[in-house]
Image 1: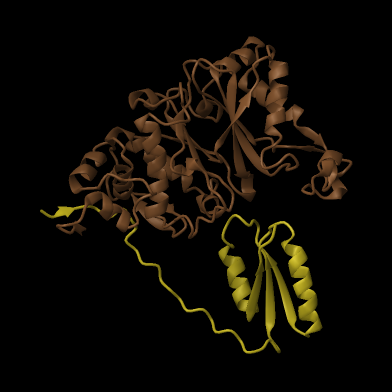
Image 2 (image 1 turned 90 degrees about the horizontal axis):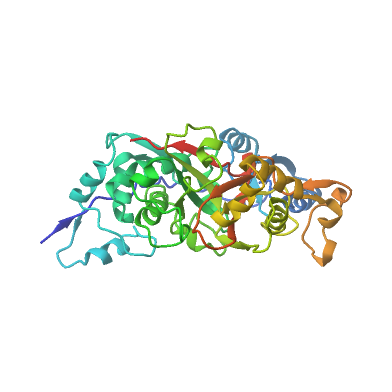
Length: 92
Length: 339
């Protein structure tokens, strides 16, 4: 005897988008540094910013309002518009 | 979805990834239909958008997960209210799910519905043995798992987790409480039923068997509350205090209202910065040394919830530590239970 059960899931398949390909080098690129607002993430990103400056790269700094929530869409759009690559800091 | 002729029902649920690790009740159309009879809402009504996948969740999907969890139909309005509350921006279920911390949604139920569906607010209120307590909290977790796509090890990144993430739901003991019900203290009407969701860890015990005055007992409570997250964390996490009847009697004997108790706890939890800075007391953890001369409150002003529950014997209460609080993380959310 066959039995029917109802599906408890959203029955949706998330759209998968390919990541942008990584540039071979960073010359002439703008590097976005995203601080997610976790404690001491700025320590890491300050050092990365120094290294980027030494390498002659343009750096844009960004900060999420809180680490507990996804980045607001406006912030994501701003990063995507201004930057070629992004480094995101998670720390504690 | 049709199960294979040779499939075992219980195994089939595990294999499809629909369970929390414990067996579930297969959601046959008949069971789901009976479950839907527990609410006046239409099956296709969207209840909430469930994180992390931000999936629209209908009444029917909640009902299917309530069947899986083992709910009776009359529990469904409470489950629906809990799902709605969890999926508000203020409660921030997404972050609560994703955190490495122990916390998960804790559901406190108030009002006439608690008696109507036979919830436990007394002996072993935070423990096993009551179907409504056990399955309502579990149904909420299954909705997040199955509809929202929030699974342990995937978006749920808890370092250790805790058993309350299977289910953590109980009723407040209103009849035996010296105070107004929690939902009334939070702005709803006494005759209403409501859920209050709190982002909490597992409960920890708090014993004081000698205090006979509210002053003494509050000081004992404050010393225990100080260790939420760690003894040097301030203005970071909230806490819920589940006050047992014997402890509540001590507070009531001194004429303390719920508001007075919360105020007195806050007053005892203003901590000299010198005790909190990094390295103080031989503990590396701590706040920036710039705060050494300040006096810092342990909790934000809205950061303490007091609930009355438990059996009649035992001068014990419970602390349920929270998670990143307020706009930074999660606000407790109270929502009426509908029909």
